[in-house]
Image (cartoon, rainbow, N blue to C red; front, side):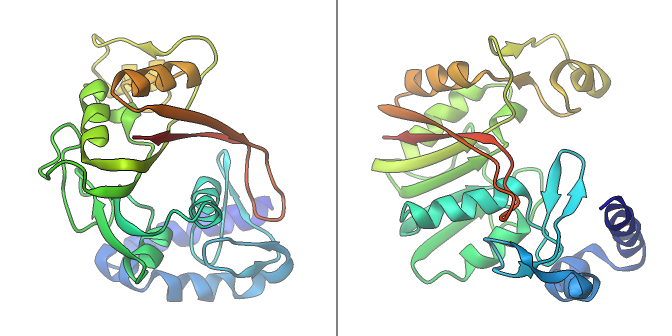
Length: 247
């Protein structure tokens, strides 16, 4: 496992050095298929690309699909969307992972709005989550994964998510979590200090599950369901908590 993880990291570094980023992203599936050819098998299965896999690639705190690059949370998300019949109508997706973006963009059952404010992901729009330039009651589904921990005025962002969501619409939210109370400190500004305090250089807080649930309810969501899912070896799922909010 360590061998494949190390080899993957070396090839990834080489690819970013030798191949232009745009070209790399456009042909990512092809490039990955070359690397992953010897990892075809029946031990595991990716819920995003549907490939049978001999083994997932272990990266820090996660498992990567060698064929499409999906992480554990991405595979769980895509499985959740299908098992709960959520892919219909208009969908707003913040900073989408490339593996899911490729599938949702061509899904004929939805009108797909992808957005990334920092231009770090592939997306068609650049919406400020605290001031979404759209009318109210538009979206049947909003996917907001690992976004709110980056937003200084997260309450304003949650109010905006509630505003643009249709009545009875669904907003799926995930962030890193901690036990105890939500921890934030507006005086912590530098990347180094934020890394030490919040676990990542561009994070501004660490939520507790109950703390995030409370803020979402305060922002107008009528029902915020906490779902904790167990790990699953076959699909490369790790244990994780997801909040499903309804308007």
